[in-house]
Length: 263
Image 1: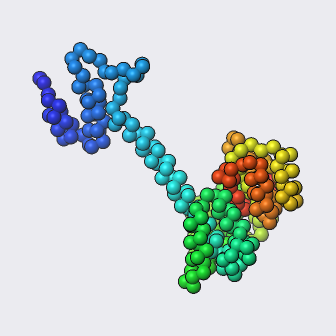
Image 2: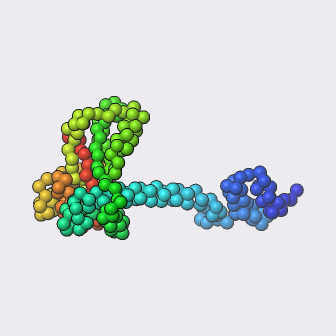
Image 3: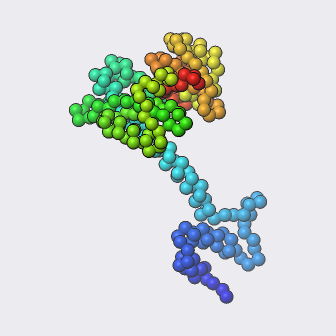
């Protein structure tokens, strides 16, 4: 019994969902609709495949892009709040007169925050109805007694405290007393570089930039490096790394608590 292509499509539509129909109909067009006695077209040693089979790769790319965009949006939002906090605490929207603001702007640029976002945050900080963001640090213990240092940026300290405690308790953790965890950590400037660096070369650049403290270690990923320095010298260290010919997009500046045991 011969079945017309249109009848086959209707039959598939009635018996399969849309996704299944697309795939099966794609097979029909690329393979079944060949003249009798002819094989599918060959490209080298591969059979021609309907473009519909490329859907999986497109979905993966779309998912990856969505995750990247979400991470960028989160980074932009965090630095927006930090800029507002720096302007309010420093009393000036001018980076030349507000050293804390200048340092935050450098960190924002190092993390690829658009200049328009930076300018909007500075402008917003001058508005009277903008909340005062402050950084709060919580100490806790996780599974197996692992020590945790949790840093949050919020305009409502009571709400932040309640949220952190609830989150830690739900995961079978325990909020620790103030000072019982932090003494095991040092506050450091952290410069992550997407390149392998030579210690002597970095040291010479650091001395030239006026930095007194520096330690170079391998990054978490292969082919990357991390430089730890005094928080007050983090911006100078970042400038020193740039003199080595490293692109700004490959440098990330932040502040971190580093364990004294592993440091």
